[in-house]
Length: 114
Length: 111
Image (tube, rainbow over all chains, first blue to last red; front, top):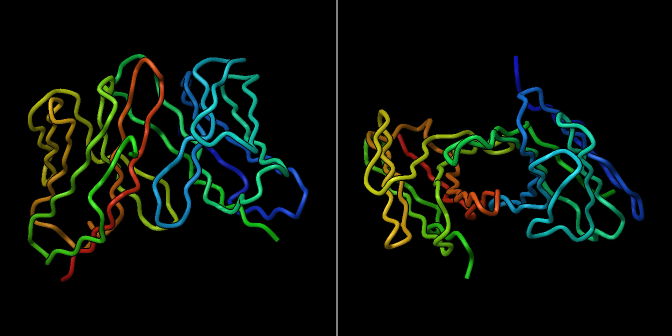
């Protein structure tokens, strides 16, 4: 079955540590996105990529980094510069063939600070 | 002003009633509008999308779009307890290539 796989489901970060969240899709989608969700709030865009080897900052990119070396993969690194990383992180992808294409979401990663 | 604003919740309706969820957006370049449902701790799932002015119906759900007023809504008829969730309005801008979400409205349907 096609879909988006995020791992791990739960992740704990120590002070000063960088951690990487994995996102893999086998839907052959060109565009991929990373969103952050805090309790009781909507999704805020961190980074997005519409093509391999290219990505753009979203609304809250500070303290995060990404790469898009393969179409299937869009890992997110939460760096030590992100002082409040505790949140639910969602990866999504979509086809870019039409404007009414929906987002396909992974199951999310809950990141907490030790 | 937020790019996408939803009516503040929580919203509580009795079973069988109509639930009305509203959303306004500021970017006139937005082309497509989506309603997602999200259960606690889970990822969002698509309920409806709309891109033309007017109404679009799918079962118990009706999406309404008014681009002149920059307003989109979702009506849920014959609400069921299983409809209890947070509903997220998302606006897609083709030129920017990204979707912007509202903060969501939490709906509770009481038996």
